[in-house]
Image (cartoon, rainbow, N blue to C red):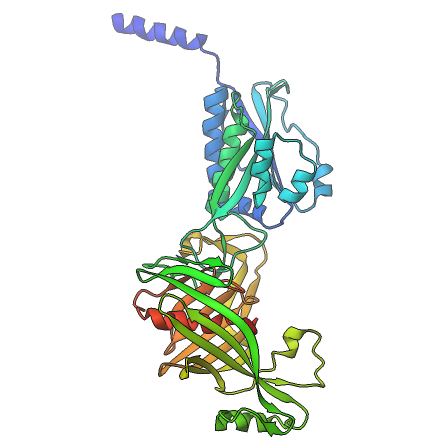
Length: 451
């Protein structure tokens, strides 16, 4: 008998509890001034993470029941198209609430031009690479606004163990993008939120490729600190300091006359093979450099033809007519450390960089699409150096407008280096332990006459 009374009392109590209102997402409008980033919203896992976060937040702050709906995402490709879109309510059921979300990405320079933030927030925005605006409008079933907040996240990148080519218009991996959206929603839907701008340090993002990824495994990135013309870094447990000196030149053959009596037979042969010994001058472009802590001085000499009838439009082009074959040198004092050849604009049909995909630069599981179209980019080397160093065969390949370099020893990849005019960071393969040779190869790869 007591049991029956308890059940009846519970049922009666249940009638006194108001039904939990439902909420639907009417729209998630997105736009990026940079272009590709909002394509992450097409990813199933990103959509699922947004769904899950909204469900938690709307229940926590407003006691609303959120259906696991297919998110109505609208990705706009122009600001004009975005302006023409208006808010619309899909149903008139007064027990159903409505949520409108906007996710926009701005270039900080353009954004700062029209902003009126406090000085502390302005400082955060000015040093960012990208600014995300996340806005949420929540209305009741009667279409009354319950919450209307806009927040901003200032994105800047931090170095990670990743390696590869950094996009200039994408600043988040897929995982980081999902996290930024979740943080923004957390702030914008919190009725007690007092934060307008969040400073977010995100891991670096890279284009996917089919030849660099994976080499970071079991090794770590070596960061280079450039100081004027010097590079400071730690290599195999020791602190190193390399220095680039003056850029000079030495005459070899001037108007039918051999000036440098030390020129090798191969070099003289290659000069004569040009058929221009009567009109052109032939010089060594000379780069002095130094291994400071090891007290070693090096000279890099690149044999070049100076053609008075050249149509070169710049000094850079004028001094880049390198002679063929292994006639270029690296000397330590008077001893020859290396001889090598220089080949320009050689393509590799098997190597691809995927401009439609991003990654964390470490593992393939992080690959995500940032375009509905495929954009595979075949690698063409700005230059390739091939020759001998201390009796072993080496190859240095520079690509992506000199931003990246691969270094091989005896046909085995031993290092990947990031940096255009100076090395910024690099990795070496786990089993390579010859620090002296690594430093000498870096000096060859970054001599200023190759840029």
